[in-house]
Length: 161
Image: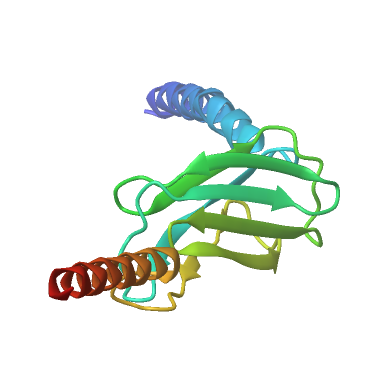
């Protein structure tokens, strides 16, 4: 009875050792990929650009700056107002300032913050002078309306003489 117990004990030890070694070998690629994600040179920045009515700004020009050392990337927003950039080797630290500048038909706005996480999520809200139209678009519509009124006024004056 004792020899059977010793044999099964040896088999159990071998089985446990095999399982532990296999688990360690399987965990190595995951640990390597985790350290690659935590590479201090790589920095991801993403977010949304919205107008004052919380509508997505499609096709807005987004410039993302790491202020010191100076490093920037440019992209545009998609149909949801979403943008994303990845600095592959940015030489940044957690106390660096990052600025996201957005230019669209509504004008230019920026959001600036200190790098606290990687990736960083930074939203930019564009306020408008005339919420229904936007800053530049509202001015264009107003100028067009003034032009139409002037043409109608001149035309009706010529018909009287």
